[in-house]
Length: 356
Ligand SMILES: [Zn+2]
Ligand SMILES: [Zn+2]
Image 1: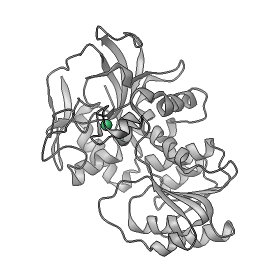
Image 2: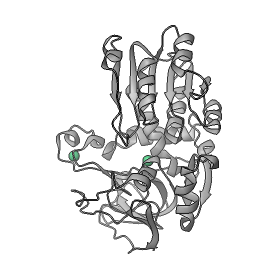
Image 3: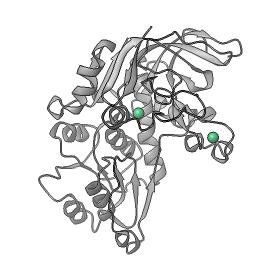
């Protein structure tokens, strides 16, 4: 079968790989759609990062070249002998977290913090940019009635946004600021709105992404190339918002996210960074601000916690993935119309789905 395989930096090839084998606890999925994620793009430009490049991943035993794609879902076409909760014909979203099940974090149920954490489509285990993928049944979450099959590819990024908003623990009515409204920033805006945030500020240099943020729930949008975001936010909120989210992954947005949180406010860093950034610790200490990070979403057997919540919110319309989908492409076009398109600001892409 055909699959997009990461061989190295700027070297992703669509090629033939063996069909997956289905273990007794696994389900075989005929992939309907798989999204290209910002972290896939990081791998393409600066990788291998999450992809094991030097030595095999401790759980999967795999290393580059590996099939890519971790935001996906599709129709179950076969199940292993011991699978009970998922049936052939079910349409599922895949929670791609790979965890050991034995470390202190797995024991505590926080599988996303596993000492050996990995993701299907980065650390081995197949990938969603393939015709078929086999995953453990407990990581295949059936879609509620009425949720289109292709939305299975958007559950993962929305779970990231929901996890960030839940960790920030702001109260309904509180104002928030989101720095960076790419795909994940947009899910944070929607999750914050769903969580009852008051005024939502969105700071984003790209016009189309700023407009999209406004459509999806941001009350005030700021072009940081045009005005001082911190000044505007501090002015309009009597000294700062209750919670800020950093979703751009660069130094200036980290510093601005700290500076525009009110005293005792919270700063949640959602990005993955390619470089170290400089911050002034006094900006945290003198206002008793708390700065935290969030990674992924709660996974493993408790995948219903955030994956299930996102699916319920897709079903009742609280979260709407449709506006994020800017292109649908075939697997053969994944480099030119996928990765390269996302790197070209003029093409104004947000979420590109590879569909089979
Ligand atoms: Zn992702
Ligand atoms: Zn573990």
